[in-house]
Image (cartoon, rainbow, N blue to C red; front, top):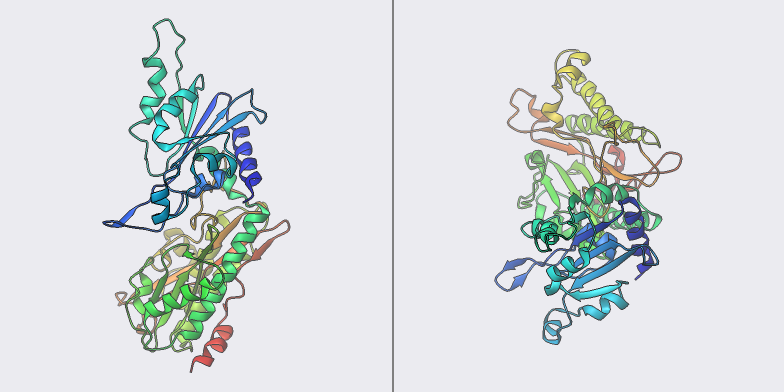
Length: 441
């Protein structure tokens, strides 16, 4: 494990913080599924990003120290070694391993957390916390005020401020390093195989759940032991539920299948959606809506380059789809009226993308410090995912369009001179899809 990577991230973070800073990073605890059966453990991404430590019930402390060679010290609190527990549930790094394997300056039993925090705070007045699940919500105020309330009346009091670490850490995570980009590309490559496998297995009568399992099996061959989010495998009207997860229905001839699925590899996510006819052949109405969504996606991708603004992607997608819906007679009025009233939102429903990284909806601001939309920079990775949804309940729409949800989503990297579509090798055009699926007959 390359601990210099995590050290460089910690150093970069501390360099952005004020003097006298004290950082508390809370890792996740393992959750119970039922009685003594636990869910598979997944570490908090902020904690993992800065430590590389992937065990439950750990806390990291970083604090400025002018006497330290690098200007700060790093303490890791974790579970101690326990032979009986390790026989049952796997090896632990323990206190010694936290230092020798993970580069901590000091390490302690997690049971000693409060004592360690209070002893290390000293004169630090700027307290930063990363605690996504509010694990220490009831203790943090006591820690802030402990010195003031437990020192002599004539002792200088420390008045501390508390700031979410996300303010400083999350903007760092928006720009991906070369190693991070390589991990995302590997996750996309695995997902490419998964989507192709589902496309080749898709046919009337097969169950959504079986297609979901087909995706998972395919990505496992590439080292993915996790999906980045629960698979959405939705046929027909099910696709009009944006986060449909039941995957319990048999596919029916004439439906469109929407599959939104992404593998996770080494804690980095992919997020890709494809939509195609269950029988492998688009009807005229399906082709019209599909081509409209694809045109919107491609128009937005073409806008991606350094210094372009984030909001241009959504605006481009909405303009293309609004015009197309007008031409198909699914909206009425002039394009100016449609854009002003936003009547297109009846069928478009959601935004058209998000950052992508360790979290599938990755962290980081979409606006700059002045409140303006953030401009693209090389190393940013995000999705673009326009969609059109026409439920069966839309009885004022011609029948051939009803019960159809079409979304197409690609993963995009900003490069020095433009962009790279990381998921372009999964069939996207009508001809590509029909050619691949013709073999299913």
